Image 1: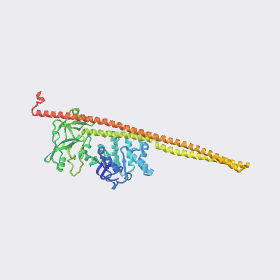
Image 2: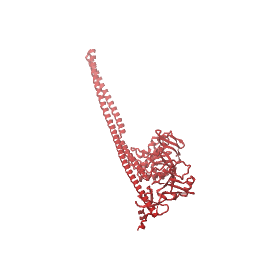
Image 3: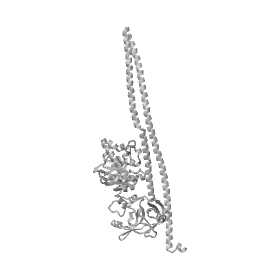
Image 4: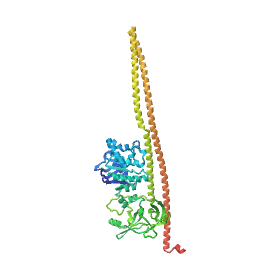
Length: 593
């Protein structure tokens, strides 16, 4: 196997669009690296540069100590598994897996052994004789992985291999990949936009945004100590909640003050802030994960009231979408196992509950730098804000799901069309027809040559008989010559007619053959036009569906904002009334009674 090293790698398109920049990463031998990020962040482009499918604008890529910038993909000794499987629909599973080895002229016995061993490892031995269309999505994915494995390459590249599968099958395949990884001691580079895949599969995770590495670390490090707002918001489901608040330093202690509370940070975070020489800051961004927020009784110290807007039952837990005192919407995860019926009723939509979180659950970020203020200053961190609030984050997930669904629809249609096209067998029919036509023409020409020879023999016989008759009758030579000349002239005209008839027969055969070829090509063109129209209709349909989704999202966002404004107005009125009651300007309800 091999170590992979990328140094200052950059990719530009048209000398103006930067897809990847300042990419520095060393992947150890036999390490499983996962590159994760949103669509368009440059993760697939990075993988394609490693594979040699994209030119590198600047920097170097090394595999096993060798710079491969100028090497062809076939010379880099890497195997790649594509998102859409890229299986040949007209070949069996065995032939799909053996194809690369056959191209390299590997001995047949060795091909059989490699395919057999890999098929046993992946559990697809019983499918070796099947065509891809007879397999499920998970089985096709295993075949695609198996095709890469039989090559025994130094590096395996997997480009979102599970994104086309449904959720249940994706979970099953993820478990299979984890088990497979234990059996194969290879260097793996895995690209995905799914953070769950990244957290469960990778030895280390590379988080990317806008073509830049945001953070590299183990799953635990990336989850527990996100370097900036983007990483904090991207890793974790549901995403981290963010609040604008102040950081207050009192001696060696640090406090945050969301919604009028005063919460002390953990000792570990206080040491990190002190080491970075952080003083009091009026405007920071506080981050807390939904699972680290607890529901507490009213009156609990450093708790604040929220109104439950939406309750999502997830089985073992419930996701509460709540509106904070400032109208901001956040998410809280509440375990349901030990909740009594009364407690469940208390967190129903429309109810007011109180929330609290501890200092060790708090993350503090600079409002301008976006960096985690507890990360040592010497670590360079790109500026990358979490530019997706809660509602937009959900909408973004929906967009990603819709995008994946649209792509899966197009891929399915293309695969069906490819099978239909191969089923037409245009190329094979043309080749068979041309071969048959050549045989027919050769047979006809041989037949006509024999007929011509027989015809000429007949004419020569007639001339010889005429000449012999003249000799016997004693006709004068002059008269004999004229008679033979007339006969030759007559025979020449007959020969010309005979050859013309043969040419006519040949022309009819050629015309018939050309008509057959034209019909095959016409059927091919008709199928291509039909498939092109099908794909165009699907794109129009998807565009209309996308427009409807966007409209629905906009309406939902508008409604949520209106509700948040109304809640904030109501909360302000309640606070105003409470202050008036405290000042004795307004009698409390119990006094009135």
